[in-house]
Amino acid sequence: MIAPVAACPRSHMLGYSTGEIATSLINNSITGFAMLFYTEALGLSPKLAGIAMAVAVFWDAISDPLMGHITDNTHSRFGRRHPYILLGGLIVTVIYVFVWYVPGFVQGHQAALFWWLVVINLLQRTAITVYLIPYVALGFEICGDYNGRVTLQGIRSALNMLANLLGPALAWTLFFSDNSALRATAVPQNYLNMGLTFAAVSLVSILFVTFNTRRHIVDSTALPRSKNSVLDFFRDMKDILTDLYARHVFTFTVVVMIGITLVASLQMYLYEHFMRFDGLHKTIVHGGSMVCFGLGSLLSGVLTRRLDKKGAVYFAALLNLTGSLSLAAVLLTGTVAPQQTLAMAGVTLPWATIVFVALHGCYWVGNGIMFPTTLSMMADIAEINELKTGHNKDGAYAAVFSFAQKVAISVGLLISGLVLTAIGFRTGVGLTQEAATVSKLCGATLIAGPIVSLCALLLMRLYPVNKNLLGQLRAGADRSAPRP
Image 1 (cartoon, helix red, strand yellow):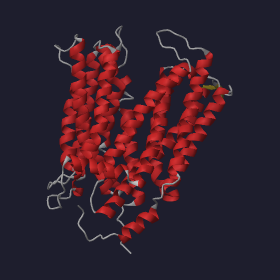
Image 2 (cartoon, rainbow, N blue to C red):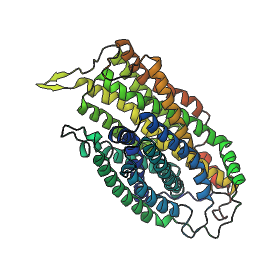
Image 3 (cartoon, one colour):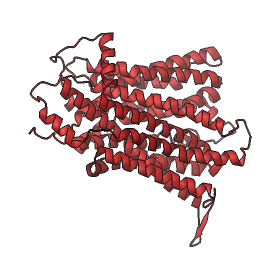
């Protein structure tokens, strides 16, 4: 029997996961505020802004696998991951500032603004790819323990949500508080203040994770060199995409992410038009979903130790279904009415908000469990491939997983638009939606997402990898060979 893989200390997991703070602050702030900045504060046409952002997302998706191949085939005394984590991280924080700092000669010109947004976003997303793909691959490598991999990814995911909550979610209060006749979102300086703050915190995060994980640097200069051509890149991609184990996880991830994107995009309309939350309650509900996702991420390791990874995914899907369908039932039947309150012991409680946070929170706890669990599955599959072939392709597997997520997000956003059109949702300032449309919106948001999760389980049921299988493969492998 081969000796068991050493467990990864929690301190190592936490030190590694701090690198996720930079990813969360940069990506989530651009997703949430870039369109607002360029359209409301700088006057760029929404159509041109949308095209510029879409071009950058498309490039981001196709560049991930390329970066995975590059980092896997890097030979350096500082290892295959750390040079890119440090270099990519430093570059991304600098470029990120220029997302929010637009020179005066560019402002006021539609064509100039458009091309500035295109170029800066392409550079920014290239830099984040250079940083993120090796960073994720490093996580595959520093924790070889089957259950520990889930715990590590859970901590990383929870820190992402915490940074999102304390950064972009609080940015409305910290940087965009309306205290004058001019709306705060129309003031360019507010965005720059946010960008400089998040860039500084991200820089600290990147420097810390690079220094803290230096113990995991493996000199790769003496390892066998493989041919590093375009043909080899496509051969690697073909091998990964035809990996039977990986296909289970890729297809499951795509379907689940489509459902999550569908709910995440439609729930904003649900807050506004069905529940009619005010600003404070929107903050509570939306922030609550981030907290619930983070709690689910932290629970993923515990559930994996008890149920194995496939069982944890099943449990998460059950939680999704129970929470969302229960919320749909009480809202659509009128058992709980929007803005309903409850008087108790002389105190008036926002009963509708409490019920919404509790039941919808179950959906996001389930997603918080699924995300790190499936990512840890990909780490297992990458190790199995290495045991069989003798070649380390952690970067490539991490990159294709990232590519699958981004494809799913694009499809989910497209479906969201089609759903809004199908239910008769009308756009325009001051328009009131019909009651039937609002009810359909509630049903689409709270029922469609769980149904997609249920469909995803059908793809996961044939996934064969568990702790015992991985242990058997490790026992049969020749561990005396150097790690390539």
